[in-house]
Length: 247
Image 1: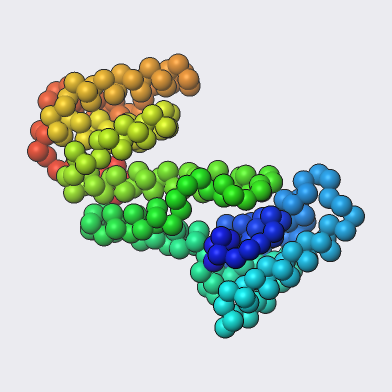
Image 2: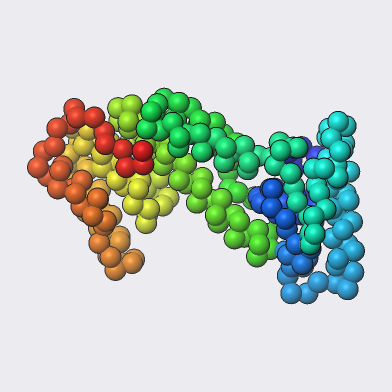
């Protein structure tokens, strides 16, 4: 269930987001109160929060009359749990598809690519951009953002395994610009450039990342990245199959 499918107040959307991001896990009442009001909860916080849960259950029933709201948004001591079986939760679907993509990467890059793309179609845009975020949701949004970024890497990895090198170069330049400290995208970009005969550009990418890492973090690129650099310098076979770093 996506919050955009029904009209929910901001606080109810916040409750839904917390339960959805950790579907199948009990979220304590204290955690929900802290998420909704931080360090200044009203005296009626617990009662008000229970009202928001009731309103969420009403919305569930309005969406699907066949659902028993109490089985979807369940009361489980010491709090509440959103069933990841009884209802269609976007983040659960995303993670299932990502797991399928990972499982297929070694045996079928085409299937991995398909699962990965479907996963990314579910989570377009910034995670929870339209939901108020307390400390709990901010942490969850960071984790989900990292999962999404890793899925972008996986999708590109599948394309590299399928030797679609030229198709990913523009996207990889964009990803490197948006994520200047994420070595994985640079590794993939260097590989794609080298495989398409653009060795000098690939070496420029290595120099750029080395400079950024040293300036920002005081470290050098990883051993695998340095190994790739050396292979390109030595004129590695452009036609050799891509050796996946993720499979």
